Amino acid sequence: MTTEPESFLENHKRTIFLIALFLVIFISVRLVIHPVNTTDYTSHVTGLKALWNGQNPYIVSPNYYMPPWSLVFLSPLADQPPETWLALAVAIFVTEIMDLGGPAGLLLLLHPVFYTLISSSNPEWLLVGPGLWLLHRAPRGWGRGLAWLLLACKPQTTLFLLLFDGWTALRQRDWCAFGLAGITAGGTLLLFPQVFSRLLRPFDWSATVLSNYGLVGALVATAVILALRWTRRADRETLGLLLAPIWSIYMLEYSYTATLFTLRRAGWLRTALFVAGGIGLAYLFWQGFHVSEPIGTLGMVVLAALLAPNNTRPVAAPENDAQTPAQSAAPG
Image (tube, rainbow, N blue to C red; front, side, top):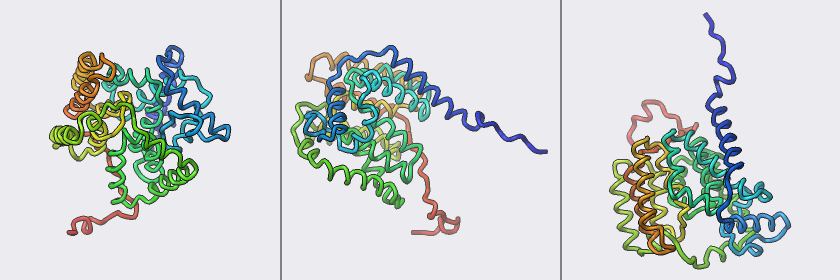
């Protein structure tokens, strides 16, 4: 007795659902959202339009700090208004949470950090969001290389994650990922070497532990994070995202959206506790401009380290490394 083949819709219902969800969220948000602050948007659009006009974006836009390959990813949005950028950020976040987490993760939209992401008009999640998604859905080869390029557009947020995954890729001999990322990054840096002098400028303010409490404070905070994550230390992605707010020399509140992402699979109770804790910390420490925000953001990171589950993703084995049971049991 033969069975009828499953229909296309049945085979791809999850993909269709995610695409439909993305479109519904994007269109809905695009119709109702209004920018609060367009300073970051203006800086990025000025640089993008300069590139299209054959000019150097690092000369024309004095506040464009991202590496030159970021221009490739953002160029299609050069002529779009800030409402489109914001709607894309929300749609990417929601769709990614539903794909890699669960409905409880939608509570993270209520977290004060997410509000700072939207109110800043910064394209952080237009780059980091797809990068994190690719690292899960295409964890080897060109997918991983493209994910690295997206994530490296915001190295202050993702440097430790990139180091951890780069070490894993080296052990897996994932030369395709290294080749794609290396050639693209190296080529664009040769075209726009001005980015190095731009990145060497001192930053006015940062919310990270190292910037506010020095080396000793960063070491203490790291010890706390490691202690809280010790039984979940195999989840190096989460650990990398939690260490960035400790050791980066520059991060503003919207960059802590990656911290929210670590709670995507936490379930209703832990996610609700995290959001409630974040609101409380913002109320206590974020009311004064550049006064005590680092205390609030550090509290949010510690809370994430405590409540975030083990988000370890399956690691794809290289095709030419398949072993027989006898080989895999051999010492060495």
